[in-house]
Amino acid sequence: MAALVLGMAVLFVHAQSDLPGRSILKGAAVEYLFPEQVTVTAGKPSDVVLHFRIAQGLHINSHTPKDEFLIPTTFSIPDGTGVRLDKATYPAGEDFTLPLDPKNKLSVYTGEFVIEARMVAAAGNHLVEGQLHFQACDKNACMPPKTIAVAIDVIGK
Image: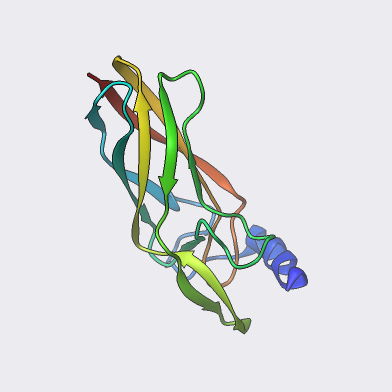
C-alpha cells in the first residue's frame, strides 16, 4: 500500500484530474464557507459550527484515516489570538475505494462537511485566523498537503 501511495504522489505532478480543463493543482480544493462572525460568552466554552466545501471530483482524508501514513484533516487556532480551541468534533468519514486498489477502503470527506469547534474567547473582538490542514485527492492522484485560513471574527461578551 505504501508503494501505491508513493506512486500516486509522483503522479500528482503530471496528472490531470477528471475535471474538464482543470489541473488537480489549480483552484481551491477546499473552501471555508461560514460563519464569518460569531458572538460567544467570554470565558465560557462555546460551540461554533464551521462549514466547508470540497471541490467536485475531489476528496480529503477524514480526521481519522484508516492508515497511519495518510494525513488527517485537522482544525486549529494559533496561540495568542484571544481565542482558544477547547475541542474540535469532526464528522465520520465516508468509505471510499480507489480504482487502483478496490479492496482498500479509505475514510474521506466529500462535498460539504462541518466541524464543531468548541472555543473559549476572552472578552473583546478577536479576528481569528484558524487553520484547516488536509490533503486533497481525486481518484487518480493526491495533491501535496495544504493548510487554508479559516477567518472568523469572534466577539467575546
